[in-house]
Image (cartoon, rainbow, N blue to C red):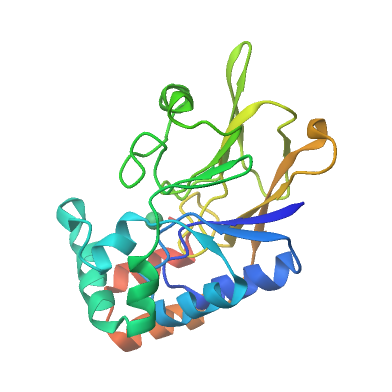
Length: 244
Ligand code: ZN
């Protein structure tokens, strides 16, 4: 089974379209929240996810855009983008976001935006935080986003094994439990501007299970132009050039 794992799309349709073209035909698409916020095409991105039959969870920006999550912790640029997004969402997009769960579970997979312990807000940024979170989900694997940084944490007999999600690299999961972050489709923050996504291969033999990390070029200037056209904060457009 091939599962495309997407997170933090942030209303960046050119990035999403390039990622979709890159992964091609898959069995499932999972989306780990922050579908909207920052970017210029929230309605179009949601329509695309609906067409893909994506299994999505709610992120902090998604909740803030429909006023079910308090944006108190947002910086001024993020808050300005959320206000613009809230005023731009159409009826379809609003009801899509309103029905998203904070935690999704199916088979071997749990999906959250932040962490299983605190699905909306916690950032898993260290092996220690990852270790504490293994007690908070029951499936073998947990997919998460929120940090915009690709990484895999495997729970082994010797503790937590960390693999940075380097472009083109496949991390063998084997039969271990793991917390997996594919990085961000629409606003990467690891210094690489290319859109990030993960491909999970859960095949016949458990030992062969892998998560591979991918980067895809997309038309960054198109997204930046659209952001300027609708009056989103310039800094949010500029950072896309640097992946920061
Ligand atoms: Zn995000």
